[in-house]
Length: 331
Image (cartoon, rainbow, N blue to C red):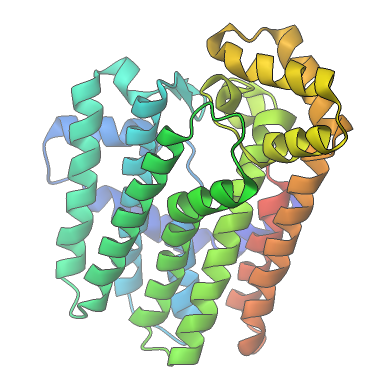
């Protein structure tokens, strides 16, 4: 995992430096509180995958200009705003190993700075001549909001289906990453088949990314993930490892194990370290961990297959490596 990460970082070092500069420059003229609050989360270890995808997808289509870096910031600002709002709704305490924004400042600040970042994306998009970009941003904003609403409605829902879960992560995560990739193609004036291929790559990458992220809640510790283990469970979020394990236990009429899992889910903040360990054991017993990993691998395979339309290049190699890294990361 470390070797692949270092390989990717080495390959995109210049792009990442330019993205960091663009992210800072596009916030710097505004009020100090905006920059300070946004920087608390934005410059605290984020991987810049979304803006990097925009840049790489532009380049794989032959783009050689500089506009891609500025446009790419749209997707990091949108992502950051969603994290700020998400943490507030979930009453989270940690993000990337640091106290969440509403804990350092207050709820109103978290809401308003998140709203500002979303508004900033529109201002940046308006400087670009193609109205399709505004349409992409509108689609993403609407989709992400729907995803958050679905997640809120489904909190603690013991019988949440896999279909409902997939719909939620599509709206919360995959549509944003798809939009970042599609925008890169648009900047490069790519052909329609090329744009569709990159949009498909982004969609499947986004689905894999969220599945892998949901796995980390049960397979990593706070040192790796930057948040308390079992955070999703304590927030009442039933993700794929839990949904699948519950389904399998019910099919096998393992009523005691079903009840044990359901009782732990209902405890929410009252979940102890022992509760969490026993719950994890049941996820392993009923294949929830392995099933989720396998589903994520299938999405990665589909993402890489979407790149077959493009000839071999530096950018194609990095995009393929990013897809593989999705399954190996620990944060």
